[in-house]
Image (cartoon, rainbow, N blue to C red; front, side):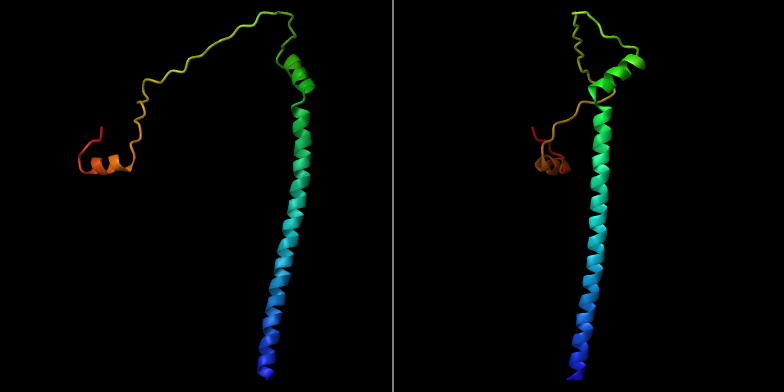
Length: 109
């Protein structure tokens, strides 16, 4: 009887130790989540300050030398996309059947 009670106490102690370890991990994760939430809030504030229209206008005016124009002329530039000469055209994928036939020397049309 005492051996069974001793084994039961050891087993319960083991479960209690694991519960304490899990509680410690959970508290660490909760602290890191709180820290990341604070960091996200700070980064959102920095981002909103960087993307404000007033800041962009001031940067364009001071550093890039842009001025607000009174011109009503708008020009549209169309750029056509061309394939480079050194790049071969991509072959269409035909699936696994084409691979099997190509293995035996046949081609699918």
